[in-house]
Image (cartoon, rainbow over all chains, first blue to last red; front, side, top):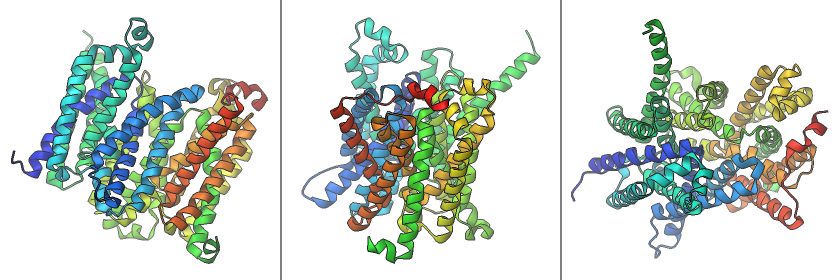
Length: 278
Length: 290
């Protein structure tokens, strides 16, 4: 396939605009949206470790995206462990992992020979930096996660809404929880080239938050968040192209604007419906 | 160690580090007990938005170029903290969404400002991950001022803050002005975050507030001990981190966090070895507040 760098970037962005909000709805219902932020910071550790290893031992063919994925998977398992450790302060697990991840990456980054611009690409995303190998990684992970979502959709939704009920009705909780971690790690590592580590969490959390305000059923929730996610990605890419802004930033800001509009819209609807009582 | 006493900028950084090693963990104890650990992350990301906004504005308004971007960061952090409180009331069923929403929008907006200001350079890296060279005389003044302010507030309102941290409703009933106390507390937190940022960096500030407290939870037997242990761990990680970063020539913010992390792991192992349970402040409530 002969694609220009812009086409590659747009295909990647469209894939992410669908899969990240989809995961976001499940995480929001599970009340663990913040997991995405913690894991994205751990992914950065994996990335910087990958760049460091690749830079020091040149004979090792290490691609930073894969080490990033490996670290974020390990991090998600570690968070579960920490949650058990701090039984009465479960919400401490995410910040501990987040801090540990970013602290380690700071050290790795200062050790690695790579320049700052490469780090900025990983931190804030850059749609023009999506190479052929990156696009392949994104497409493969996209297909894997779509298949996983379709096959396990019922189980994932059941577990998100009602852990105990799901466990009682014979769903193997350990497998499903692992699947959640695996999917989150997958989505984060595929998104980081386009929106960047610091902004992945936004693409997961913001569309779902806006959809929560609009949707009346779970099906509608999933649909709305995908629509909002794609709208944010498309308007962000177009906006960043015309105004020459950072892509990741403009995607997130358009998602935030949509959320703001939805939040303002709801009280307006209420006011108007009050004025015209039917 | 001599290098730290010899060079002015290293001495400034060291003094600032020692002050932050005290204020951040002390506020962290209240934050962790109130289950607001993630709030610090949201506030630090808003601080970045403020700094980026300053960089952007100072391109057109030359008045601002002389000022330190930290002040704009402080203003944004304080405003953001009020906004989070507001969002909590919108998503009553999903309160925990408020923090990710603010955190993500803040960083997105920050990136836009940075790219408008053409700011993807060395300075930004120092703001993100901290830098010992960045601490100037003026910054040291700001850190000292805020440390004094925090200490005075804590001495004056210790009992009230503690009461609110454990049981907000009970505190309200017994006549404590919860709303203004919360405001005071959250602004104090925003100020500490904004000033710590130069030394440890925006992405690492929150770890100085949570990691020492998480370690203290493992070892402490009372609330008072939690303060003492948190400050000890905080100071130890700042000192170990800064000195080792200097000799190994790596990022100081990163080493400070790693030192705190090692101390946390050590405290976990210590607790496991001694076979005790993690400290649960709730049980100490009556004793602490009486």
